[in-house]
Image (tube, rainbow, N blue to C red):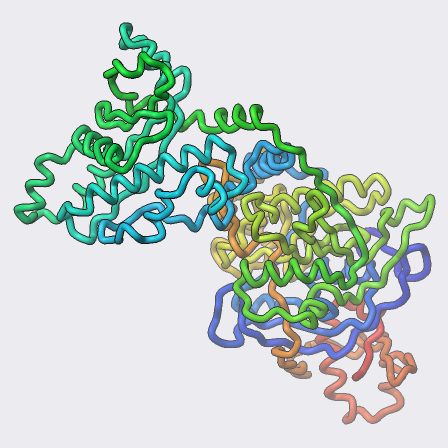
Length: 633
């Protein structure tokens, strides 16, 4: 047993390990989406499993799905899977991870609108066809009042955001009305208007350029540059050979003319209470009509570069609005409990699997088999014992609750050397919070804290790293990580292993020292910026995260009902009787060594059993196979 784990007696003994029915497993791969059973692995069932023994199995490339243990047959399977781990105290937080932590903090402080990044807002269209009828649902949105708009869409919008949306809808209605009679062709897609707040610094610059109209400039509140976008969209979409009508339209198509037409059309559709809209050098500018100076104002446009600066100041504007409309601070609570069935957790799991992984049917029995059932024997903590963490050893569910509402559940195994992350499911309505990354960072922090009570617990195991699957490479972003060599079972730094994996998806990682063509440079000074590490967690410039369906916790779920066992062949094992003679067998409740069975029964009756046990001892390891109990079904 590695790192001095006890194999008998002591506070973390936890009974005995009993496994059953070893064999090979062939399944359809969930990573490369193969059409046939190309995923090949070793598999066995565990009736009970000591925490120390499961730790040893992890360090030989095994994982569990419920009570089923599996290990990829690396040289034969389609997608070789390497166990990956991270020493928690050495973890280097990347800029991306820092953004995730800050985003959650802003959300808890009430500074981040919960609707930002939500599926409801992302589903709204950004472009509209000229052939769309005016009575379509999109056009109807522009006709509702500000209060109706708020109630019909995102009820948590701040008041200013609500009014800006209403102004944008009014412009969209004018675009539909004006271009309804213009013959441009159904292929032209018009952009959607976006109204922006004019910042004080922009007003100051415009006022300095127009000394006699400073008062009018101060009444300038909102602006929109949709006219420039419309002209660009029409010129791109129309064919080189245009009809006579289209040529006539293009002759008068400029941002200035479009802006003026839209202002006229908006005037026909009805006035905006408290505001007056003017066309200024292609921009649509909205002025507050409360000041009488506005009546005589004929100023110029807000420059295009000013609008860009206003866009870059968006975050500052949101913070100022939040200061005017303080939000109640939310509380985040993390609870850990031993693995058991919880109806509230199952409801969240079903919602997650249905919306994120698009599963049609999610049953309670499959959930229990996958995430509730565990063979790991619970070891409770003991007062004054620094070999067991305060929660004990075993399988646990970490609940993440915001203001009491369950938003995520991390299924983990706490073992003598590590926290092994098994699976995570979260509320799809909070996808913008990047809960997969956030919970991973919290689990790393948990390991750091646990070391104060259990010094041997130093590592964070992220499951399998699959270099041949781009969507699984992001795990290497948790640096500095190590990969397990599939032959010598040595831990190899990721930067040393990567050149080998770039050449061949199956590699003996501990051979990195024999590479003659190049000597990889070991770099642990900072986080990786490799684009492959971010492939399924794209961060947009607005800091809204589009969470991919394959998050860090998504491992291949083994469904035992779809797995066929391929018993070992004695011609392949290459092991001697000495390798298996000390394996303890459970024969109908009686425990005997294999060498005792071998002496009592004729050889010809033991051929099949010997071949099975030989391969079992090879993939599990002689030391561990001698210690565990093999139950013959």
